[in-house]
Length: 210
Image (cartoon, rainbow, N blue to C red; front, top):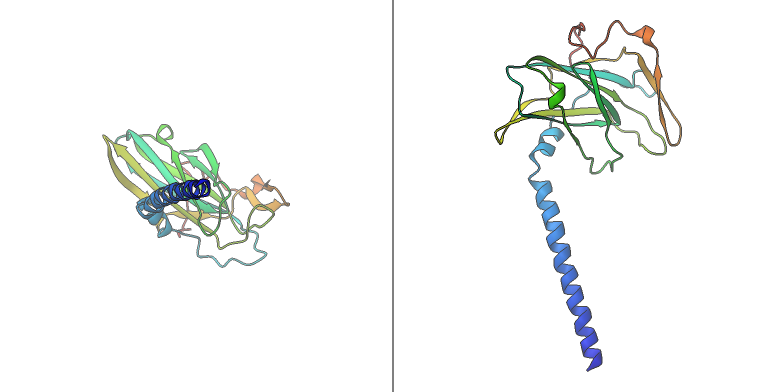
């Protein structure tokens, strides 16, 4: 009888664990399945279209998107992902850098509240992407950037834009080819290269469209 009770107890625990496992991971899979933003970002990955050679110096590329809004939204969230690293400015003001380390088979995007950085009228998103680097913390992949701006007003959400052919890029910035060691990525800066501040609205984009 004692053995039967023990067997029954383990059986109950196994059942509880099985139910917990099923409920938890089913919820996770459901959340992944209904993640419309993740799907949108996956289909909006862009790069320069310029051939990327193994020893090309241009592994630091600045992307810019200028846009207009008539009134400031209650909330504005920028969802973005870059391989391997990014730095984000809004209207010339530094916001943050990312992404966190990720599993290449299941990359995760960042969601950044940029409401306080925006204004009614003309606005500018500037993203510097570090690409084609590999060390003890990163792997060498095809470079990419993807982003989507969503504004929320009174509980309603609206996509303002995502990454597409209207974005412009520049690989001649003060940020030159990054230096890496096993654990770090070091910025190399040469301000002589730049012809102006590409994080500002009045910068001349030229014709470097994606």
